[in-house]
Image (cartoon, rainbow, N blue to C red; front, side, top):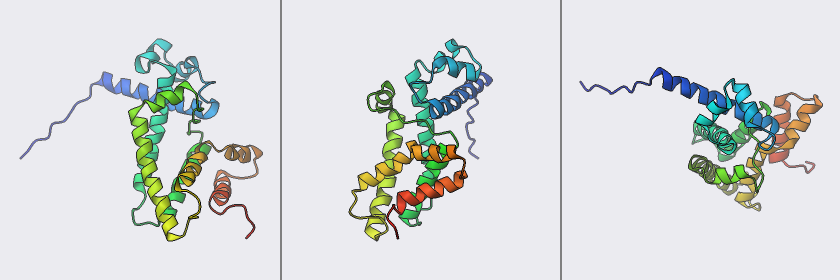
Amino acid sequence: MNSRNVVKVSFKEQMLQAREDAIIRTVNLLLAEKGFEAMTVDEVAASVGIAKASLYKHFPSKEDLAAAAMVSVMRRAQAFIATLPEQAPPLENLRAVVRWIMEVKLAGEMPSLPSQNSKLRATLMANADYMDGLMEASDVLGGWIEAAQDQGTLNRGIPAIAILYTVYARACDPVLEFLKMGGQYSDEQIIDLVMSTCFDGLNAR
């Protein structure tokens, strides 16, 4: 009988990983609430309950902190995409991803995307985990978009790349916050409204 080698993780390593997970969760929430420019390393450390020096042992800069949070969300997105059935209609899977993006955003767990010329953007562009995840997700979503266009369920006259960017734009859509601030609609109703404008358009029918 073959025996399997079990890798034992020390208690110290478990504690370090738990602390790192807590840091990433905190940064994720702060990025969603305040954005990268307004977030400070001091408030991250205070929120986690550790000294700033301890924080820097895990992440050497504010940009690295934010990049880790963005990678975490990207991995969540990849995991969600992997749960969608391959045999489902491509438009159905695409709609499921857009709904998931908005659910995460309304839950306050979607980091604000960096501005075009920010240091964070440069850090993300150099982060292999983030870029590989983004390329993988884009390939899958792009495939669904093109398949849906071939089936006639998405407008063939719109370039697939424009539709892809429209999907990603839901991660930073201010309409979600504006409707939530109004207090007239539940999160589910808000998502349904934005889904309708995104996929059905604004023309009278």
